[in-house]
Image (tube, rainbow, N blue to C red; front, side):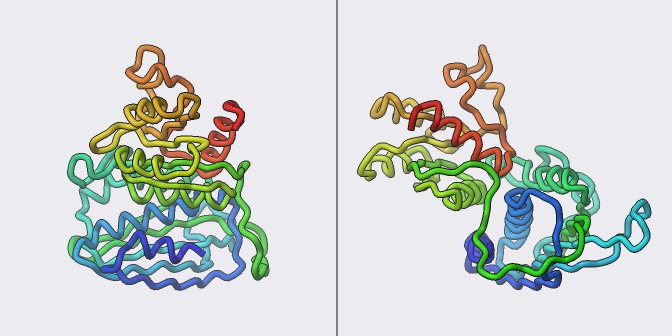
Length: 289
């Protein structure tokens, strides 16, 4: 189901192969968070293949290698392998640290892989990586097998944790991964979503709408116009517009912070799909949308 979205994230220069080898296997985890894990790993692989390459995503049910597991215990292993630039030992040792990044300033927050680790650990699993410079990288996510494998239900509707709605939302985020993740979660919950990659593009998109959006959901730190500046510009047009900010630095919204006027309107990054839906619904309900 995620294949078309993942291929868009990879672009035309990277080919992708899916090898689903665990049909019906179940793990106990938040579905939207596992999707976020997969998207973060895919984007990480894409960035390691600047000149193009090949990505393989596979799943298998295998015996657990954890010495603490009960005899015969099994895990679901999700492997994401690329043939990109690879990593040296020093980089491998630090990749899961929050805010550690090998990208140029302004090109990444360093939260992608730390988010992956946090989600997987919360689900009772672990993440390992194998990589050498010039020989790509393989990330392996291990999650405990939950109960007996179930028979997959054909054509079952996709369900999402958290409340949904039918309102119109303007989502502004310069990071393509986060923007697509947020759009997907909200659209599958029933919302009418318009996206923009910058404040300037958001103003243009809002001007093309037949009616004002019911909510502005925006990143704070973006090239050019910031999310706070965008909020002020749109509030000039629509004074009652509800606003929810997405930010990894929510202290600016606390008393004494530069965005104190929007206190209580920030959703801290990283966030799960259920958290996103709950906060969006709460902001809409508070505004009477």
